[in-house]
Image (cartoon, rainbow, N blue to C red; front, side, top):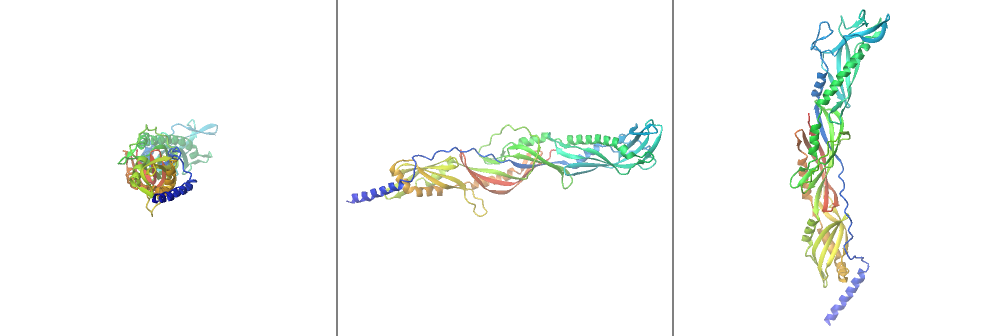
Length: 490
């Protein structure tokens, strides 16, 4: 009697459960596998490179290129010290393209400088000013008749010349000025009887001579600022992974080089060239990344230079590790309802598409595998502190069994099992990521080559995205700051 009384309510309960399950839509296997997408390409960041050339040294190259007359000879036709100190010495008549009484007119004279050059740099342009003195005679080309002169038997006249032009970084890695000579007489020399401005006539041969001097200045600056070899060494070094300790590596992954306008530093001591490594920096946790054959040093191209950067820092929870930790937390847990009982034996974690799949092996009144799938997310930030905990969101549930008991059991226990898994499916990568913060800070403050040192500051650090990857769950932090490479190749 007692046996029959027990069986009747149980049978009725089972019938009710079976009816309730009719619309549950449980499947007979795990959810279909969805291929995992390839990792997104890290955006290109700019790492500024500050290159400086000593401004006094560059001006010294110009001083060396343009003669200076320290002592003028008594006849004022040549320089006594040094002998080659004249900028222009016309020893033959220069045709003026004019006639006097049917005879061609010409000019003869000289020009020199006594004081230092006056150099300035603004708006990407170099300007070198020279104060010159000159004397000029005008007469017939046959030399039989002098008709006028300036600067003889009187103080020499003055003329101001300028060598100016843009300065850029050449493709083969040197400063490349393009200087053009121009002349502006400070005071005119006019032969009224001939209606000729002698300073204008004398200016053309002087401008031609000064342009030759400007070409010499350009070449000297190109040679003095050539740094292709040093740039190639920096480029190769930037392509190597940097060991920042405990199987952690910083990779710059340089892809290109840009440059901005040259400028004079505020203290007037350096001509600075703003460069930037275009790179895809990242921090890699694990074994040393393979070092590929470095690409050839590219030619620099004009581009924007931003001192701010972001680095993706990856914290990885492998599926094996996630399975082990989750099994430790929920393995052996029992669920009971009347005479039905179920125990969690093991948990296996894998990836499918953008979801994490948790396979729960159970035993007891029935044996089988339950599947939960959900999206991993960062736990919400607590206050201003960036959290590194991953949690399970949007959990779905299926059962890999067509057994009636299994269907009944999973219906009875599904919410409790789902809650148990969701509550314990949390993996904390805070320590790993915050440890990487200190490592990256050290990594961006170090010597790269004998000519280059990197200096940086971390200004932001917080959760970014979570990605389901082939080998595990990737927790990406965004690490931002400023970084600069001080490069002194000269």
